[in-house]
Image 1 (cartoon, rainbow over the protein chains, first blue to last red):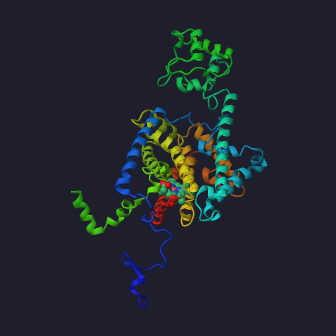
Image 2: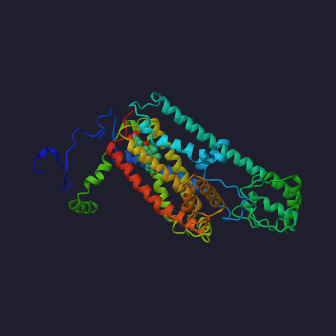
Image 3: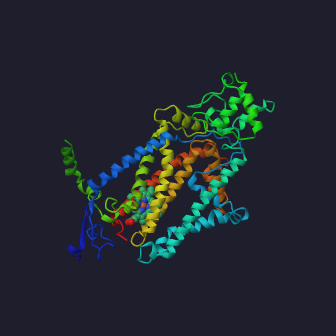
Length: 261
Length: 223
Ligand code: HEM
């Protein structure tokens, strides 16, 4: 250290670091900002914590009101299942469904568009270098981001819409029937096997679950007409209009159920 | 009592500066919703952190029941959800929290973008943020397979196939993700490892860097 003057050296623990000329780019304290600053601890943290606790309770209520979904166990042989990623991947998934992003052009959808968008985002600080920070003083950056947002919203919506239409054309519920029915089973049983929405509550095996009653012996309480009425109009917690199929099939299903005594 | 313990430690380790740095920084007016309601946009980073903590805690509890093999994974999740006390809440928090954290992170990114906060001198933190974004999406992708239900299996099947369609490196990525030729036992085991060890490790490291940079550079000034 000989030759170096004391005032050029800053002590950090036991090591000597040469003092920097010129300060850091931003001073790490806020005394330069006008207005009412507040210490992080305890003032600001306390307020944050109070809001966090309220949100946490709201969140807990939500988790109890809407238990997380769990479908049938994975069945690698069931190729008729319509797969869907988690919702925040919808836009990427939907992007692959257009003419110039699928088939021979798949690279466009998998690499080119997302890659360009991501590279632009990653390099934003170097692409948008001016000192101005207000959105309207950066028209290019702002409009590109708004465009990207619009595209994400649209693609997400399109994915949901397409999926719903597809499901409707498949005869409702998500996925293929989870029960195997023998070809000589009664007509009603075959129809039941397709009603994944009904099965969601009453169980594939009619055993019921939670608030939904077992249907194993419905026939002893209800007639075919009454069953049809409940399927159409709902009852108590059961929503109306869940049956997927024709009126004739509905009658056959109700007939089969009415025989369950 | 606590005072004595603190003093004992402080005499030896000089711990004051460590927590003082965190505790004593000023929160400027323009980011404080108590002064300007619109400043709530500055809360999204903190909210992302808060939910990340929830994810880590609920995830730790999930692993007390979850069994990462294809014969038992589904049953273990079902058991946790239906039989274990508070199981619905633990799984629910992790499930809905996974979506919420993405939403919060997205809003945080938009706040940073539209306030031009990524500009000099904060370029590095923006890049760290983008990496965080990727790690989060990776956590979402790998976590989705773990319940091993129909939705999990088939969504991953599609995701892996899309990755495999990438020119040149695609097949390698596909084999890496699957851990073999089929989506099966190996895949579940490695998705579990990636979801529970690798990515959270990277996430914590990146978040550490993110926060150190924020403390170093301070929050960007008012617009
Ligand atoms: C795990 C995810 C993340 C966490 C927990 C997190 C947390 C935070 C927190 C607490 C702040 C302080 C200011 C605020 O809350 O708005 C902040 C600032 C910042 N974040 Fe993040 N962040 C995350 C992801 C991201 C992402 C995805 C980006 C963008 C690509 C990003 C870029 C930035 C930048 C540039 C700042 C400095 C902003 C300024 O000085 O005004 N962060 N982050």
